[in-house]
Image (tube, rainbow, N blue to C red; front, side):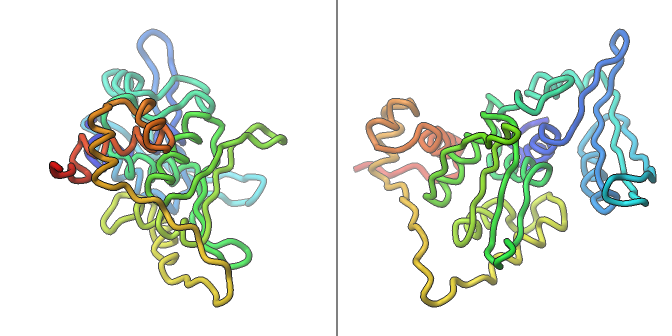
Length: 266
């Protein structure tokens, strides 16, 4: 499961947010993901990506929201697969507050799209404004999306838990949401079809005449890239460049992985 491969990065982000890794007696256990039946296609893709036997089952039940709800569940029991996922950062048992981005190299937009597909929302607000959001109990995940979005759009958010249930609700709207959605939901990417369609629809929105202009992102310059590479420390570079540690960390990874070209010599 190479997380620099877009499909695996997406899959792992989705599993961290919406998967359940359970221990059983001895070496037994299983990974499960339960979704609305309308989203079965993404589970079929996970099944194709996994070189171990897994199954997809369907069940009908009543919920607080519907008397007839059909869900699909993907189940994977392989010890080798579960060991790999656990090593990458998918905890056993309750995990909502403890999940965090992988510590090894991974494809950022694909990983974050997986997290948002599982625990986020994309679409239009009640007033007709584009939005993209993530709801999470994990401080690490809330901080990560804030750092990533600042790098991509220039918009800064300071993650704070809400007072009611201690959950982070990170929200982006207007042009910022458009830019972030375009970065995450690029053509041909693996994703929930309904969220990819919602992200695509955001491109048609135009700011109404007379509405205050949106924030303009601070783009990275070749000079800043040289300083970042020379210092080689996101924490120290953040001080030198007047940027956040998350922004420097993401930019440094993009430069090292070749996602953005390295600056030429001065």
